[in-house]
Length: 167
Image (cartoon, rainbow, N blue to C red):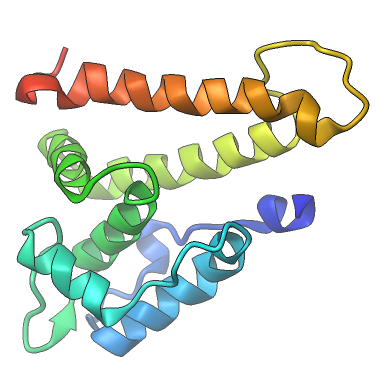
């Protein structure tokens, strides 16, 4: 598992094809890079139905001539990851905040790097909240990581999703 986490690489902006991708290509790209990692937590692979729902919810830009732009593919990746922790409405608000920051390529690349760094830090045991000496690492970090996950989600909801205000 640790090797899988350390090998996780979410494609950066310039690694997403700029020529436009058909739905099947978007699904294949996302599932090929994120599939092995999300399989570990039994999270559903990305499906055309999911992408269509993201487009209908106006979180992801609609395809042009059945092709998704680089921005739309990046949005699919971000929404797919956000949906593991947040509702569609919350993911939409968070994407909106990111889009208001301007320069989506830079914001997207920072998002990818933040996810990869957080995953590595947590799985390496570098982010913990207690120093309990329990015999099994799984149990040693269970409560601390649960508390960290809860607190991070609480923080994002409180600071960025409450009453459509950015604090």
